[in-house]
Structures are given as C-alpha cells and as structure tokens.
Image (cartoon, rainbow, N blue to C red; front, side, top):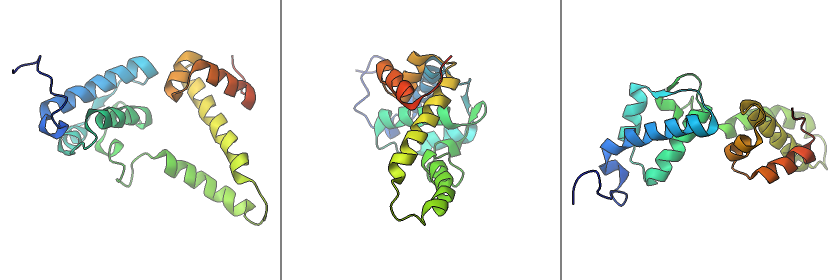
Length: 166
C-alpha cells in the first residue's frame, strides 16, 4: 500500500523527512488558533535543524518542540535556536527562573530556618497565571488550556492566590 492513505506513524520520523516540515507547520497553525500565538513561520535554519534532528521521540517530540518554540520565541520567525535546548541562546524557562532566584538566594541565605519553597512557589505560580491571563485577554478557558489545567482548577488558583481579574 502506498500513497497518502498509508499509515506511516510506525515509521521513524527521521525516515519520513517529507512529513517533518508539514507537521511543524500544522503545529504552528494549531498553536495560533488554540493558544493565540502570533503568526509564525520557519526560517531556513530552523527547517534545516528540524530536518536534521533524529526525533527519537517521534511525532510527539516534534509537536511538543514546535509548540514550545511558538510560545517562547520572539518575532514572526522560528529560528533554529528556538528548538535546540543545548544552544547558548535557547530560551529556557528553567534558566530564566534560576537567574532570577540567584539574587534572592544571596539575600536570604543568612537565615538558617527559612521555608524558601513555600515562599517562592506561590509567587512563581501567581506570576505565571497572571502572565497567561494577560496573554489570553482574561479568557479563563484559553488560559486554562494553555496552562494544561481545567478551568475550575484555574478559578480556584486565582482565588487562592488573590489574582485580580477583569
């Protein structure tokens, strides 16, 4: 059996190079519709990166990488470094949070008994929810979807964290 009707999901993505860019563009389009990202396209370098990467996690890994790049990238084009987590200039939430917390840690480490986790985590969660709510213009359904939680959980967190909504 050949042609477009053939099920190719069992074939490794690295052996279906023609599918890689089509899948990436599908995810970009879906991200625009579902999480309201700005219109994006792939730079030539990004296309080369996607085509040359082995994708050991298959389609799921590709979809997650493209969605992450859509969310974290600046500007209308996705660049190769938006996908390469090892690249020096790759956008990394962990590195961002780590950099912000280092200064705070220097200030409080003189205290012997300090519950840093209970102090920091609600603030991180609050900042994330506020950012997503702003990005979705206060639409709780879209915000919950973007956060990967249900709307009732989001509402509960908004109340618990004292987040002002429109």
